Length: 187
Image (cartoon, rainbow, N blue to C red; front, side, top):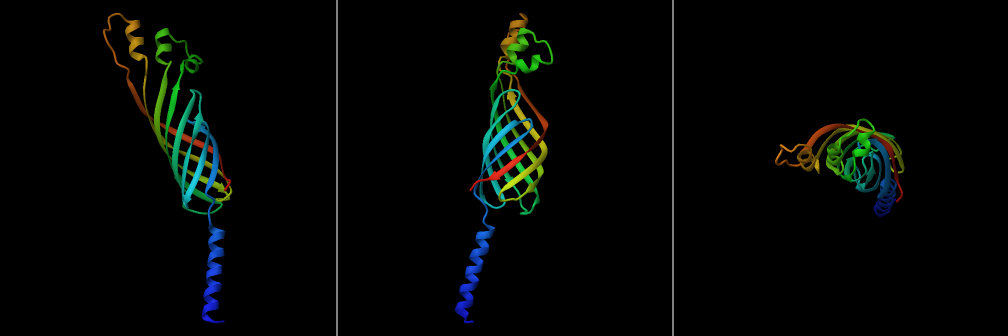
C-alpha cells in the first residue's frame, strides 16, 4: 500500500472513531430529592465531560428555578459525577405546610405568607447506565440557603405594642441535599 493510501485509510478510520465517540448534545433530566422536591431540567453537553442544566422544581413550599453544572469525567456504565447547583425558590405561602405540624398565631401566619430563598449546593454521586443515552443517578451533598422572612416586622410590631420598629430578618443556613433521577439524551 502506498503512503497516500495508508494516510487515506487512517483518516477514514479516525473519522469513524470520532463519530463513534461523539457525545449527544441535548437531553433532559427528571429527579426527586431534598430540598428540591420534584424537578425537570433541560441538559446541554457542549463538550464531554461538562454538562449544563437549567430547569424548574416544585417542593412542599412551591415552585423554584435552578441551574447547574456537572462533571462526569469517566465514560463508563458506572461513573462518578460532581454537580454544583444554584437556584431560587419563588415566593410561596409556607403557612399551610407549617400548620400541618403546629397551630399558628395570626402573627406567625403573616410571617410565613411570603417565603422565598436562594440556594447553592454541591453534590457527589454515581451514574449508572449508558453515558450517551439513559443514565440513572444517585447524588448527595451539602447546600447553603439564604432568604428574608417577609412580613416578620409587621407581625412582631402588630403583636406587641411595646415594639416600636423591627426589620425583616435574613435567615441563612446549611442543609443536606440528596436526589435520584433519570437523565436521557435526545440529540
